[in-house]
Image (cartoon, rainbow, N blue to C red; front, side, top):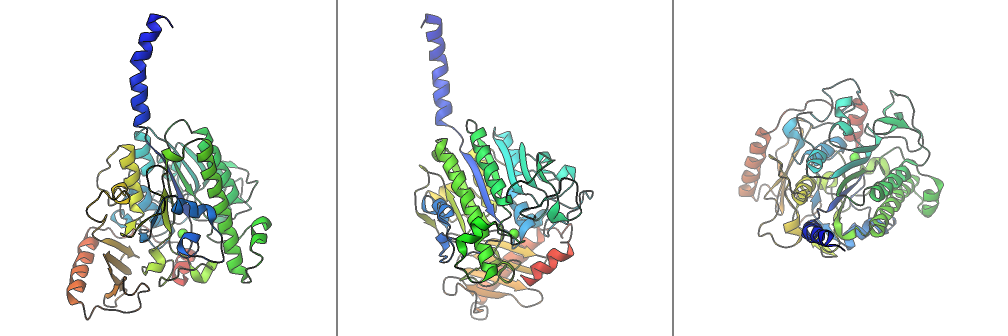
Length: 447
Ligand code: CA
């Protein structure tokens, strides 16, 4: 090496070393759709095998009081993408699939998680279900995602997709960056394959991947290879449901293997959770021991299987019992990326996971559906639930995990405190900007 090259090496080396030391972790957010609380191994399922999803929990942290910000699909995703209670900006219902209506979808005034991540130098991708508006301006590639593969509506047929625009929401094209592509595989497998390819393709730069499976949401469809694995389950609805979860679990296997192959396990934070509780009357899901189901603010609608893995940073087998919420994924991701979005409701979970925080992440968590049709407030062990015109009920989740016994009458001070907090929070919210389309509204009611 001549002198000039040697000096060049000296000048470059410290910079390269500093860059390595401060490498920002990749973030992978894996979402299941309508997966019941009790239907993965790490929350106690017996008749379904989820060894790969369970690895995220066993090799990382389980949030035993992990909540989503809404008991059904689109509002939860709106909260996830903004880090804010979605009622603050009127996104309280499912948007109808309306490719020409600019008022139906996640309001364009909001700045989304992938936009912040991109600003922080991340390559951003979404694979799977969007459900946050169907116009060109609402498209994920117009809202911060560098890459997109998946569908724009709220659900999809798992075997058939049109190559042309289609009025039937569940038959619309599967797209790559907005352009229709042929669906050649079971849809869940297509998403998994794309996720693995995304990881290999982007392994050398910080990336944010939102892998939003629509499984095990209806229609209940699975290929024989997954159905055959559950020939022992007699109930045909439960059997199909289990088979669809197997597809997701196989996908998670591929994602974790790709991280290992690329030596990225210690550089990647992987989240897994369901977008709402199981619609037990519809898809054979179980939310045991929680009361209620998708669509409701009882824990069965909002308390979900929730885990995160970051090898080398999060201790394996950690359990965090403090209530956390899907909005925290936003705050944790942006904090790790080194950006500070204004006006968010979530908090960075890392200090809590690592035992460095003195206070729990949240003093209180809040829920509202239907512009005020139902409310819930969680504060420590207590939960206030208000349904319709009924007086607010109060439950002690430590003594009564299934919300069976209203203790409001014997705890007037707690009731008054949580009722005041509910009303104060409600004042900060907007009325819903749009209504859920009729079939979805019926389904939610049923669930
Ligand atoms: Ca859902």
